[in-house]
Length: 148
Image (cartoon, rainbow, N blue to C red; front, side, top):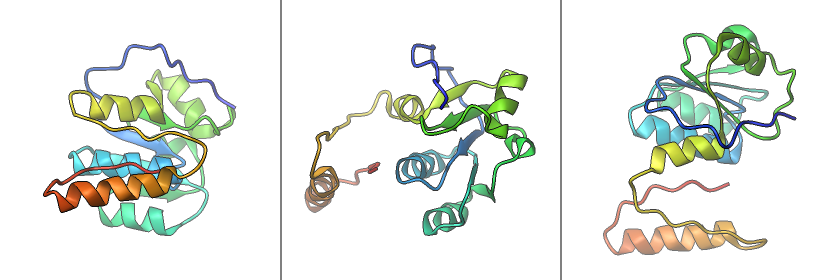
């Protein structure tokens, strides 16, 4: 498993972000927020899931399987802690000196300067998130959220 540098200073701009494992519940939500904020998003996953298809409809360029060539012109690589060090896209980013961010760092970069609510715990996080989003919408808000 990889160990991203969680202490690294985040770049001022992330440019095109390539998400390795983009179809996962947490990664797909963060990728969606990047797309909604106007960023170019590319990514890869092992399976063509509903999340992958939805992200494609929003404009993400996504490959099934992992290959170094898929990093393309990405300026930043976004990964999860579940990624193995021998992943060819991760290795390509290291070879080219492309910044590698853990998904939590990418989310932090995106939400800096915005009011946020975090929900944590062992049980009930998804339910609590859904209830909070529903309440905020009923109050006239337009919240963005990441669940997973």
